[in-house]
Length: 494
Image (cartoon, rainbow, N blue to C red; front, side):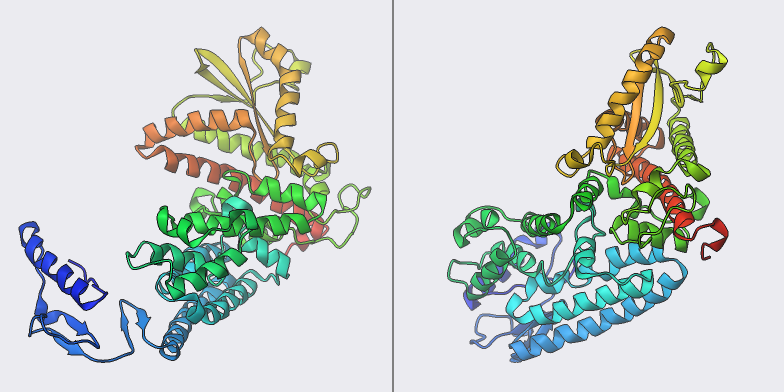
């Protein structure tokens, strides 16, 4: 059995120890009292004599400082210094492979490094130390990605992937939510708990007035860290949204759609074509965070349009072949997924159509026996939520551009598909990775086939499928942005 801690008033600790001794042995659990250590300022009568006794007022248990504020602050500083060594190594990784560095920063080097401290240490003691840690994370991101984020850009980066950010959660901002959820479930929390009340004040200052909670609500209903952190993220997202221009709002709405950011969770693998080189990844991050890479210069491919800060023209310009290349790469990836799921399929089917009709054939990928025995003609299309015709709607409703693209595909292909006995299924995706409703429905069905074929859970198959498709999409976008940011491909830095 792993080590454990019993903490509380003397009588409660004695009672808990008695329960362990009584109920543990039938379950194969035995307490080795000679290896136990007792910290107490009260009398020790009633505890086994063989227990080690300490009257230290400052000590650590399972990595958490217990004691006066000075000791706790010093302990947190030591842990921050230890975490800094890992962050320094990540900077070195970033100079070689920023895609790997960001994945490690999010999953191993950021908030997760301090979450245990945040759960067990009052915010009044831990806040300053965690704020300094947040600054180190920001500097690590800047150095390893070669990006100097403004405050608003960093605010977006700290949002979760599902809100259009990079998942680099702020330890200091979410400190109160982390501590409150832990303390409120400890069994010792009351509506007069000093540390809990101060944490609640800090938390309510970080959320909207509509989502503020009272001490009674916190104690009387189950409250998880995720629930509380979601309220904080809602406020941060809304502050960012309100400060944005209309194009930036449309960008944020699309990027925060379900699984749009799945490309950021892909484990980099050049052998599986799941890797972006340094220039591609850094460019993709700047674009994802809305950083201007063009400075108002004119498009070197068509020489007629200015390059907008969010990259709309660069990703929709018909010159230079980038739009066609992106479409073909997505088509090929979808086809390979169909083949892997053993559902069959053919690419660019034109059988039975004349030469002119084949040029507008409705099936990028034709899958037999997909829709109640009927062949399904999957037609992929990429749309921009920053298009002027849909911009005002896209900044309010997620997926507006993909929905319009689906409607257009049906209008142009339904008759052709009906004549051939096919079902017309448009797979519309926005440039930021937001897939249309029909696409999500059929990708879900494909994920079920993949899960059965690969003997894995459907959730894993779904995240893998979207991650692969969206990584291909983002890589093609990055190349289009790069070719225009540097004028010609030969000028793109290695």
